[in-house]
Amino acid sequence: MDDYPLSKQEFDSIYHKVPRLTVELIIQSDKGVLLTLRSIEPCTGLWHIPGGTVYYGEPFKDAVRRIANKELGINVLQSEMIGYIEYPEHVKSRYGDPRGIAFKITDYSGDFETNNEADKFEWFSKLPDKMHPHQGEFLIENQLLKGS
Image (cartoon, rainbow, N blue to C red; front, side, top):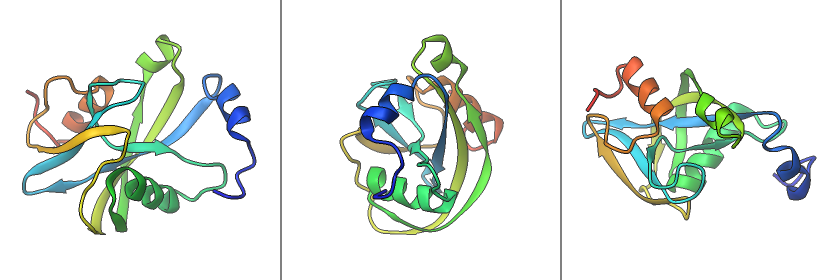
């Protein structure tokens, strides 16, 4: 966002000291749920739900569109909020305190392509090994994936 009220340095200085709002992007098809293999910290090497930080003053719809385009190369046409994910292990490890609002992407255009934050994407009909634990719990509890 061009009019973001914090510099990167200011944001980084408070990043691990306050709760941080994120959006998590749930995309389903007849092949299952799309997950990406994370290539950056935290949780490098784990399968996870694509998502990212909501900017100050940014509407959820705009955050969903921005992050889907940035991380997956798609344009979101329609989405709906389906729940939330908390990350107590991140707090325990002192990495931060993200709080994710999960959105199911119900219509989109474009072809999937990951950015530098993920090594690849795959579709899963059951929970993969090396899945982010809190996100895996969310997917099972919401009957989006079966346990492994």
